Image 1 (spheres, rainbow, N blue to C red):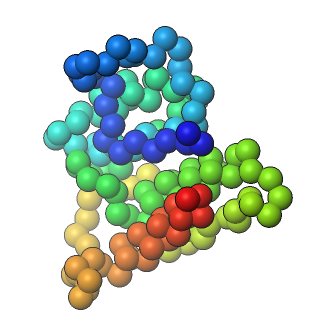
Image 2: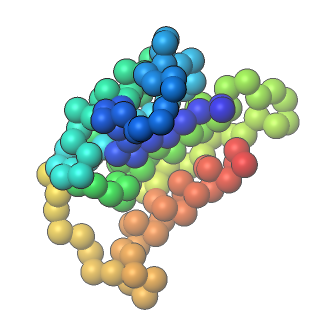
Length: 143
């Protein structure tokens, strides 16, 4: 694979039936490991164990629980990683451009959870819709 993104991934406990786990050496695949600091299903240490199975893993902890982060700053981390890792090994016209960051600006650690704007007709707040659309566009660039 060109890269891997894990959200609330885990390296322990080990799934039954795997013959080659853990890997004998760190995997040379660019990887991003994202987890919630308040995740009550997959504890943060389990995601950190998984990250250690990769060469130079990138990690990001968001302030929430067991869900895909939806704040622009957290999504910017994912967009930046996918954009950078997805362009590695591509040349010429096939190399994608830099994806725009949701809601602009630099990615920063999320502050403690706050109340969000009420949902719009789509069921998502406007900021989430924009950031989600930008992430989808970045991922489609590598499909």
